[in-house]
Image 1 (tube, rainbow, N blue to C red):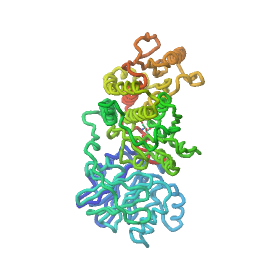
Image 2 (image 1 turned 180 degrees about the vertical axis):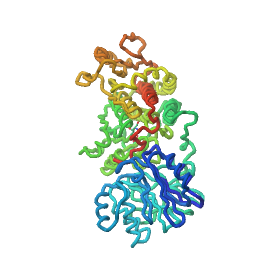
Image 3 (image 1 turned 90 degrees about the vertical axis):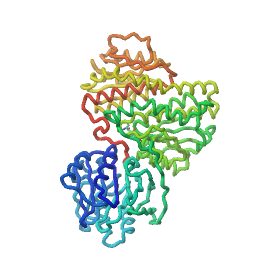
Image 4 (image 1 turned 45 degrees about the horizontal axis):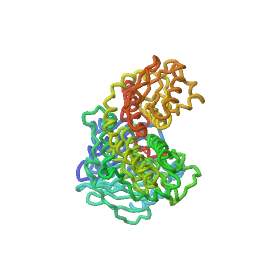
Length: 605
Ligand code: AGP
């Protein structure tokens, strides 16, 4: 939820820290701060709001120094103001933190009794105080190690010490931390994207690790203070391309990229010469899979809901889709003949990671479907399937959602074929239909203006509903989430057949209602549900591939998607919903790439 960066260099670091913080703002943007060491003191400067505010302060009052740390915050403990902004410093140490220290109240009491005082409401400040205390009696390594041992919960830390002017310390437990290698300078950052403008040589700390960054070397230690080595990865330039270019915001770029990213992902997994899906070496023999459990959060969870329908349609395997924050605490029966699939764009979502850890501890077989291949989930899962969507910066997920659905669809077809539950002819036909999908996506993307016209209907709406049956139901859920998180308008996704069991009471005259009604086997029933809404004054925006439906006077608008294989409708249905949420948010002057209260990677519970 927060972003941290640290640099030790042979030149001034404040500009590089600010640049890295700007790349980290998608992780949190309530407040920002920086600490450097110069003139034998810690210079801490911080403020509420965006990194731009911090930059203005530094312009007036520059932070010198060739080593420092920086932070962008998504508040967990304490309101987003200047006092609670990171870094948190004493005379001798300064700390930035991403995560939650769950025993911070107990530790705060313990150190108040020792005579220490606290300035902020944050959990993080206890780390500063404990380090300050241990510095009085321990050498640096023991000071760090003993401090970390007192902490319960999750953290990625960046620390600088007034009396150690040649190093920056990093530490990780449960929140991601990358190390970047430069020439006479080294870096830590919450992810490689933050460091991309300074290096493409990256290592990753694992839980329990800490590191000492010097200008000429990096030392890694494990949780037993034992020196260890870390693999150095060289990121391809492609991994690092994430600029807006001519687009107004990242979200419009990422929506527009979907035909390209879908085509790229298909090319990664499909051998067109043999009409074969190149997914092999699953951690469990597909023929022996008894059940598939899909676990994720938010939009990624909606891709799991979608996969449930495809698995039921194409295999005899039992399947469940679970919200990770529920799965991780329920007394779930884990079985060695089940496959546990974890879907996560960032690969760092705390709840999803914890659910994966639970499965790993029980020795069941796990698969991670991620967009960030060097992420924590990717490194913990038994088997990883990247979605190849490229960096997704907009907090509201768009191209990653399509990528998640696509990889799940490919995996399901492959498993079905390996189990001989789909015949070769049908398998080949579905693959040929899939090859055409990017073009259908492109056609749908070209109709942005068609949906833009109805965005105004939502601006002052008290609320709205998204209805769908079968394959359209998970997309109704996803469309509602898009509108909520971008425009702050209350929106609910419902199974259309569920309306008469209560939600129909919400329909008021003139209320906009989205109905997803492709011409599939649910079409007639969905039209009946749509009529129930119209009869009560609802203004229906219908999204369909059906050309025959006459436009009744109460269907406010009909958005036409191209006709394709009905199992692929979800990929097309979600595009007008992305556009709708985007344009309503624009009309409401909401921040498109950084909606209020949210963050791109939810690395705390
Ligand atoms: C997506 O629009 C949301 N911002 C959010 O629900 C997101 O999908 C969820 O936090 C899971 O993130 P992940 O895919 O990185 O695990």
